[in-house]
Image 1 (cartoon, one colour):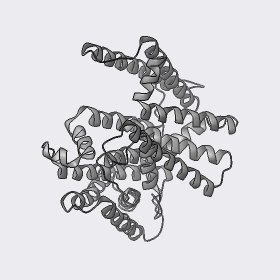
Image 2 (cartoon, one colour):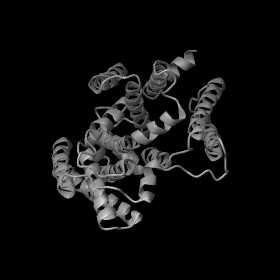
Image 3 (tube, rainbow, N blue to C red):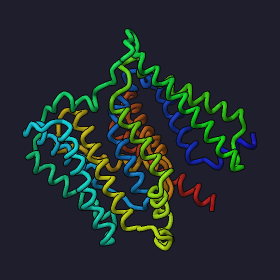
Image 4 (cartoon, rainbow, N blue to C red):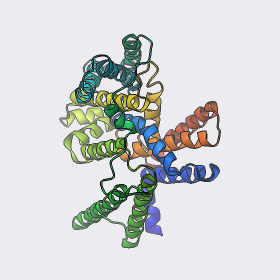
Length: 387
């Protein structure tokens, strides 16, 4: 028991968020009388929050680098508008249209990153200006009107599902098989990670706790896949999210540039003295954020099947909140990709759960604000305890 307490204490940020997410899910499942975890609602939860989760991944890197980006919602709206003009008005193919849109997002990020990195203007000011600039450009491009419909192939990016190649009748067999494969892959990596730590004499958790963890995660993965299989299977956008999570987890934990971002956020002067090219890192963090904002805008436009002048309103606040709720530090240098995803899911489940039980929009905003405040207070409290 002492080992379990110590393990929890050492990983209080990560475990705390997982426990919070599970508690919120159980609470809303009970008060909604079982509606929250119905297969259709779980699929809607993924599709309705995918664009915020994509933004949260990019925002996590920005916050870890001790910056902030308030323009992501406006960039998402602007890119959605440009993609509509390209695909609907000029009949450009879906793939070229997506690539051009991502390029525009990257250029928007580069524009802002240049001012922040090389002119030392605070990111808050630059991206506040960017928020106004790109919102204005969106209104100009769309002339104040919505543009629809997108090609059917493009819509499937948000609304489509993977085909059932194993031809299930009442249930999506392919989704169940994917769940089993993911469980085996997870067990393999966990055991491999434990073995590597033991070889270097690092402390590892007792075997019984490891077994309990593997069983819990395995059951959770397969149960989640069963819910998806009971409706239409795995949504395409979930595949996109999975690829992004794996890619950015690798970048932040296994690469030099990932370590440089954490070093920059932890102590910029020390990082610079250690040879980290801090300006270049800041610049590319904003470029990356611009590309992910563009991707988020495309996913949102595909979901709505329209580009609208008001698209992306409030996205930046949801993405920032997801990162802080997921354990990112307000002082920079701390935060993980999975934490931001869990934070985004906490926000998504709360939004969905409160809507199901009839909480008004006004009260939803109030409650989400309180949750964000508590998350930041928790961050400051744990930091003061550690120091």
